[in-house]
Image 1: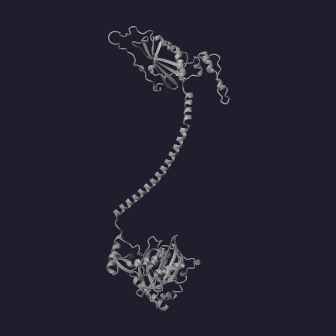
Image 2: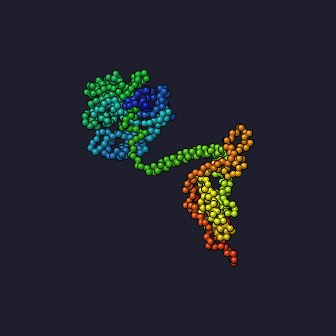
Image 3: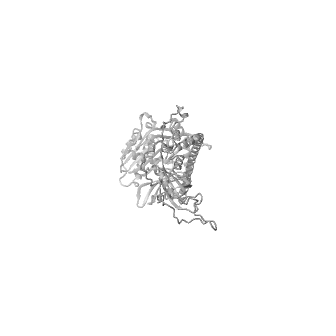
Length: 589
C-alpha cells in the first residue's frame, strides 16, 4: 500500500494530506492546514516562507516521509490556450513549444512546459491547454521541498486534479459538468466532458469581501464560465455544477444558483465513495473547510490512473529522442565490463578456494607418504611372502624334477633354458644338443608318466661340428601346478622323511598352530594317471611334435679339416633357434 503526501497553498494557508492509495480509492491518514509564515528579506520586504511553513506543519503533525505531490495554483503558473493544426502525437511537443515562444514573453526554451489536448476541435485544428513556469521557480520549489526534508515526485497544476476526483467518484456521464473548488482567496473551475478536460478557469477573490459579496461573486463567475465554455463543449449544453465543500457553508450559493436555473449540488470530498476517512483518526480538515482538500485528493488518485490528465512540470511531455547508438554501445561495454569483472572476481575466489584445498591435499599426501614409508618394510616382507605362497610354480622343485627326468650329460647338452608363465600353465623352453634321435624319444617317454607335463620337440635338425652331439632341437615342457606330494615322489627316502616331519622347533611353540603335515613312512604312491589335459592355448601350431627319425642321415656333411678354417653351421652362442614365445607367455625367467 503506497503512501503519498500532497501539498498546496493559497494566499492565507498551506494544506497537507497524507493518504494511502488502495484499489481506486484513498485512505486519509492526515488532512491538516497551517497559516502561512512570513519573513523579512534584506530589502525590507515581507515574503511568504512556504518551505518553513511546510516544515513546521510536518513536524507538528508528525507526518512521515513519503513521495511528495506539490500542487501549484493558477497564480503560480503561466497558462495558455492554443489552436494547433492536427499532427502526430510525437510532433505536438515541438508545436506547443514553438507557439509558446510566440505567445508568452516570459517563456524560454529551457523553461519547463507541459500541456493537455482539449476534446473541442474546429475542423483541422486542436485546442491545447498548456502551462509553464520559469526555471528559477522550479529550482525554488525544489529547494522549498528540500528545506522541509522532502523530495518532490511531481510539481503539477492543481486545478486539473478536480477532474481526477470527479472521474473516480461519479459514474461515467456523457454530459459536460462544471467542477468548482472555493478556497479562502481563489476559485478553481474545470469543465469536464466525458474523460477529457474542456476548459479551465481560476479567479482570485479579494480578502476584504463579505460573505454575501463573496457568494454573489462566485455565482456571477459560475454563470460567466458556463457561458464561455459553451463554445468549447461539443454536443449537450453544460447544465450541471458540482461545488466541493460543506453543504451548510454553501447553502446560500445553492439558492442563488437555483434562482438562475442552474442545476448545482454540493459534495463533501471526505464523504465521496473513493475517499475513506476514519472518524477515529481525528482529521481536522474533515470538519474545517473540507472543500479546500478536494484537489489534493485528486492529485493522489491520479497516481493510480493509467492515463492521468495532468500538467507535470517535473516530467513534461517532450518529443521522443532518437535512438542513441553510442549510448547503447557505451552501456553495452559497461555491462560487459561489469560482467567480466564479476566473473574475474568469482573465478579468483574459486581459484583461492581450490588452491587452499590443494594445499590441504598436499599436506595430507605428505602425511600419508610418511606413514607409507614407515610401514613399507613390513609391507614388502608381507608382499614377498604372499607372492611366494601364491605363486603358480615352485621353480626349484620343477628344475630338480626335470633334471631327474632328463638324460645325463653324455647324451644331452643344454645350450639355453628359459622360463615363462602362461596361465594356467608354465612353460620351460630348452635348446639342446643330443647324441642321437633316440635320446629325444627317451625324453618324451620320461615326461609321459604323469599328467602334469607335456613335451613337444621342434626345429630338429643336424648340425656340423657338433662334437659328438650332431642333432640340435628345441624342447618345450609345459608344466601344470602340482601338490607337494608329487615333488616328494622323486626324492630320496631320507629326504622324503625329513620333508614330511615337523621340525622340533616348531613343535615346541603351541602359541603358533601349524597345519598338520601327513607323516609318510613310505614314499607316497604316485596318484593314478589321469587323462592328460589338453593345452591348445599353451602350444602354438609350430610346437606340434615332429616325427623323430631313428637315425641321422648318413649323407650329413662333415666338417672340412683341411685348408682354410671350416665353416660350421651352428647357432650363435646364447641365441635361441627360431623360437618365439606365445602371446600368453612372459619373458625369460
